[in-house]
Length: 421
Image (cartoon, rainbow, N blue to C red; front, side, top):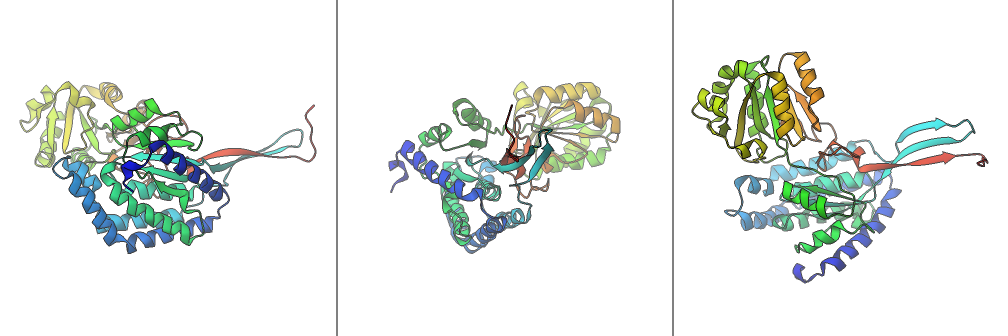
């Protein structure tokens, strides 16, 4: 059937019904069964890599020349990236099962014994844009944490997503778990997104992962609870006590290792006291590969830096472009970062421990770093195996969202005949 022939409301209702039933089946699934499903899914990804690459090539061909290179890079799959996806599934299988953890235990004077234990959230809707590996990571994390998932990837990645979901379902089948624990929306009709956002009779949580437009759409239209992942206008601040050569190398990695990820540094902030040392070295290290846009002071120090506009200070480029701002001291640096950051990840580069402490305390971002590349803002790098996104809000979860953050909790109350007076 042509996917556009599907009625979005009926389709989401059917997916939701099946996901809810699958979630019931996962609640009591053993750790062994979940781990088997993940390992078998990894095998299926490797065995189906040729079909997945062929499907991905169709997706890439549909956007080449129409989308920025960074978008195409996020969409493209290679043998190495597929192997990375498979390895991530196996790593998640090795992680401790988050379900059933005792989070607290206390005894009441009346003899009641009360436990707080971790439980799955239930059914999760994942809406994301071009990166097909998000579907594998999200499915694996949900499976291990006992949640069913409905994936709605970008229309550009629909062929890749279909193959990835098939591998995940093969793993579930091999482990004797409900295949409908992983499903994908089969239509590219945008009304399906609106239907998913309001399917609160089936869906317990929606997680968007993509640009600001997508996240704002979800925020504004959802009646289902959401876990927001806003854009990453990440800053690296070079304090006056920074080790200059080290700082430049960190910034180069933070910006250029991969420009299309949300943890990439987009804004470079430099203390005026050492700007004459930092700016030329920064331009030497980056100008050939990255367009630098600076304020008047930065432009005056190196003509390889182009004048910035006011819009630059608040832009997540996801491309080889970075803004450069000169500030007068730590307090102004903190104020600048606080004003323009999207509160995803920000870093200070300094050998002054007190300055680092002040910055890390004052900057209210999900992740704050000292003397490290902002590209370490990643669930895998945090030892979570993978992440379903990086939450920039303050409720339920914040920063990389891994297994523990995909659980809720309930209370188990043990009595021996107590009645309440």
